[in-house]
Length: 110
Image 1 (cartoon, rainbow, N blue to C red):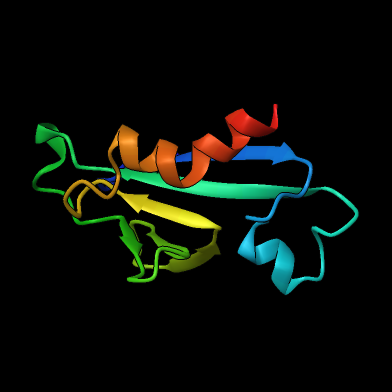
Image 2 (cartoon, rainbow, N blue to C red):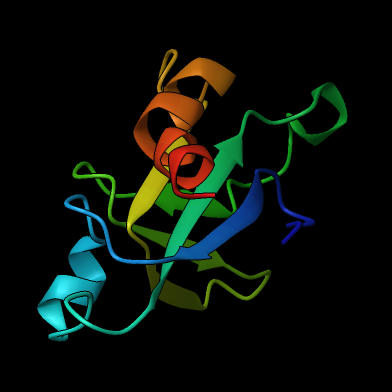
């Protein structure tokens, strides 16, 4: 999901059989013990040079489980995810971190 106001969110969803690392959102809703569940991750990229003067359109929470998208009128929408990787916060959103925390399980399940 692109944001015209800076920041970019790349949805990355995976499905598969439940594992010991079943999605926290699935566990919260009583899923993951006999059925399937969808894990959701979002990756927020740094702003591009031409976006530097635009207001920030994406915020992530400190626990890495939610993000807020802000439109041009300032309306805020909260989205929950199993993992939010914010590349603007050091190496938290690097390919290595995303793979180790989210992608490795998907590869091992397939």
